[in-house]
Image (cartoon, rainbow, N blue to C red; front, side, top):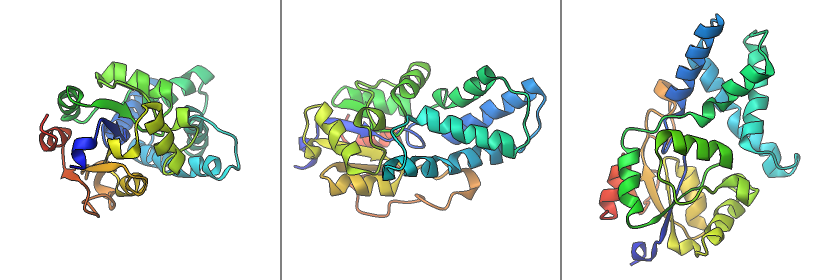
Amino acid sequence: MALEQVKALFFDVFGTVVDWRTSIIGELEAFGKQKGFEAEWSQFADDWRDLYQPSMDAVRRGDREWRPLDTLHRESLITLISRHNITGLTEAEIDHLNKAWHRLNPWPDCVEGLTRLKAKYILATLSNGNIALLVNMAKRAGLPWDAVLGAEPARAYKPLPQCYLRNARFLDLEPTECMLVAAHNNDLAAARTLGFRTAFVCRPTEHGARQTTDLKAESEWDIVTDTMTGVADALEC
């Protein structure tokens, strides 16, 4: 009966819907080849992602005023450019490289799975990505969102409760009418505490061979699967 109350599916995006690591490595390799830079681009991508949570922590704590993820990503990129001894880039080139996060490719099962789910449910993002990033990504990748929501409209980064609750309210829904679909156990745990239903989509290669977390469901989520089409199957879409 609990799942029958669900009207909207909210989606974590990085890692759950899109393969950020492979996409970013490809962007970095192409950029390096074009500019004549050599680097261990897979490590650069991992380093960039490793700065993701720390960059948001200062905003979560209130030590910094609100900043969208594009701004935080760019600050991290500047740090890494210096660390990897890359010189001579123009501001426009740095901006283009930073917007690689707007050009991430979906996992192969996602467009089909989301399209099936859209026939029955409202589909919305619940991502730390900012609105422009998510809109540009969706347009390029063919992701059929009904609403682009998340940290920016809520002015709160996950897993702060207001990120989940404010986005449910934007759709005039109670948390119990919402389901979070994510590849990250901690994200699902935060949402479930607030009343959301939960679907775990296992993405064991999100972080490449070094991945040690989220290799399996760590709780009894409402749905456990390894594809977005599996979510559609479980919800009879």
